[in-house]
Image (cartoon, rainbow, N blue to C red; front, side, top):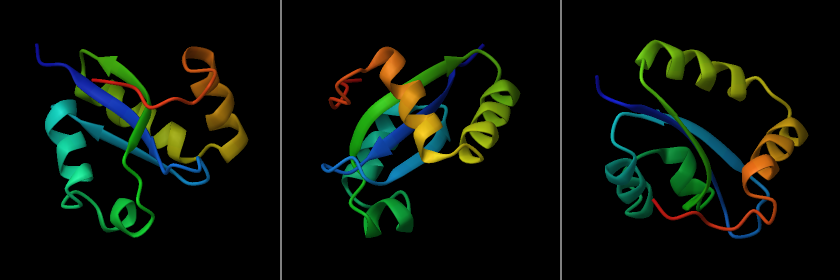
Amino acid sequence: MKSSFVYILTNKYRTTFYVGITADLSRRLEEHYNETASKFTKKYNLKDLIYYETFSDIEQAISREKQLNNWHKEWKLNLIRTINPTLKTLEY
């Protein structure tokens, strides 16, 4: 079964967050970097991957994305800091 990903991007100041979902994280990150993926990420220059989760079922990933999109910024920061305490840009 193909993996799916929920990911969070931010800008260099770590002030704005974007939660997305994809089946191909490498390709999607390249699209964000090239500013062809989302008007929102392009507008706010969101290119730094700071968090992601892997799912074996796309429905679980969709559900998680919806959940995270409804969270307050501080909740997202607390989640991100569980695996990335310094909010550094992750490699994938």
